[in-house]
Amino acid sequence: MSRVAIFRGSDPIDVTIRALEAIKADLDIVLSTEKPILIKPNYITARHPSTGVTTDGRVIEGVVKFLKEQGKNNIIIGEGSGWADTFEAFRIAGVDKVAERWNVRLMDLNKDVFVEVYPPNPLALRRIKVARTVLESIIVSIPKLKLHRLATVTLGLKNMMGTLASKGSMHNGRLNENIADLASILKPSLTVIDGIIAGEGHETSENPVKMDLVIAGTDPVATDAVGAAVMGVSPAEVKHLVLAEKKGLGICRLENIEIIGEPIERVKRKFSRSLLSKILTRRIESHYS
Image (cartoon, rainbow, N blue to C red):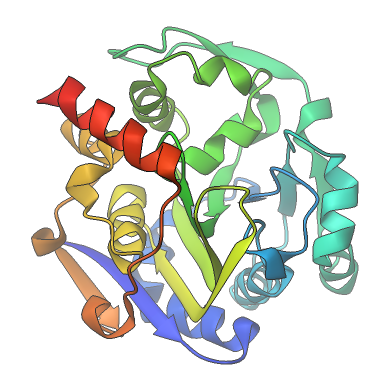
């Protein structure tokens, strides 16, 4: 069974560290190499985390503090924003101050060197250009807990799209297959979902939901599945998670996931979805049935 931690608290830094400490035995394995560690938040746009759209800088700080206490010093916070200047997004979220306090490098992945890679046994994505720094690092994905119009949820796996040279090319009618294929080459070693202030409606709707949660795990599929369930979405409804499990990238079924900390039923809330999301979900379900 995969293990996923759910912790709740009023201090985002503290609750993040508690969640990571709960899965420390798993982390000791994935952090055992000397490769650089890339922390990849979600800054699709330059909105304050209180809007429910972007990653809370305090969760990032909790991750950085934990890693530093484990003796990890080669840490990069990297993002390639799709709709904004990446460094402006860092500033608005307070990530520039986090990097300064902890002597961590900030990086705009949009300006990195891109390498063409070929996902193994692709469902749809035969080749894609990825920022080289990501390919050379241990990946820590720190997405926002929120819904998405096309992918149902946007969590740790979909967050990897911010590392690509052409993010829009993923939205070619086979988004779910593309996300699963991308996960086969960019599989996060650690996913830490920022559920401090989550987002319902859709990915940029700015409908914040105060949850005071952090969800963490080393199985990226299982962690995203738990994140979906916390928002009242069945993981079986999230097609890129189902496909990723079929590709052997992790566990999607909740009955095969051990929850540490808060039970899902105690913290879950039924998130309201946009009308477009509901229509597209029905079309996707019809396609897969």
